[in-house]
Structure formats: C-alpha cells, structure tokens
Image (tube, rainbow, N blue to C red; front, side, top):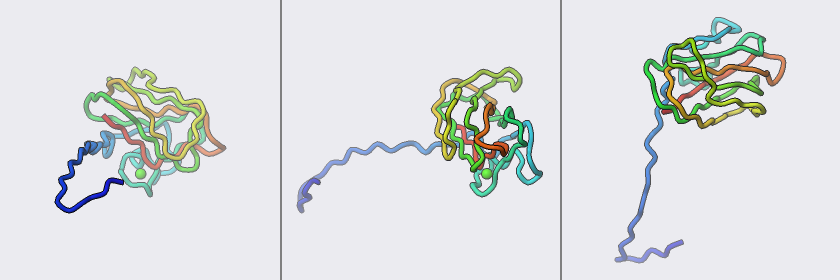
Length: 146
Ligand SMILES: [Ca+2]
C-alpha cells in the first residue's frame, strides 16, 4: 500500500480494456438438429443465459453462426449447460461450405470455456465429436470475438 498524504500528487497509469463485442449475437444460426422447437440454434446467440440450444443425441451434432462478414477472430466462448461436448472442433469458414479447424478440443470440462483462436472467418461452427454423457449437446451461449 502506498501512503497517501494530503498535498501529494499521485499519478496513476491505467490501461482500460476495450469492451469486447460478441460478433455472433443475434446473427443467423443453424444446427444439425434441435431437440425441441423452443431450444433452437438461435437460442445460443440471443445473449440470454436462460435460453439454450439443445441438440439431438447424435455425437456429431453441430451448431453454426453466420457473422455476416469476414472478421479476424481472437476467441470463442462456449457457455455449456450440463450436457456438453467432451471433445469438439471449433471450425471456421468463409463460404459456409468448406470448413477448417481452428481448435480441436479433446478433454473439455464443460462449464464456461474461453478458447483463444486465430484466423479469419465469416462462419463459425462448433462441431461435436464426443458427448459428456447420454444427452445431446446443450449450449446457453456461443460467443465469438474479434
Ligand atoms: Ca441463450
């Protein structure tokens, strides 16, 4: 602790982080499956932590979003419900049909995953490969940052 005394000038050096903008929020979303009509793909991009996308039971289920333009990406946050992907690939595409892997995750713990990525993309996809349990993947939110 620095003692502050009356009459003394103190200089503070502050670095403020620019607020991060979720590029995916409210953008067009699609998924390989949706377990019910009120747990559709868009629910993972609505900025609401009480709503979620929930996939059918297939371990190869995926969820994707169209950012509406090509961005240089820095990170993807996955906010999982209890049923998460133990293994998945985070993929990127510029045309929505050819995908490349940004990150391959082989032992995820679920919860909130903040995954650093690099590369440019217009489309971003969570491609599941192994489920955490018997239920399909379920994401409260998937956030994409530039
Ligand atoms: Ca949501």
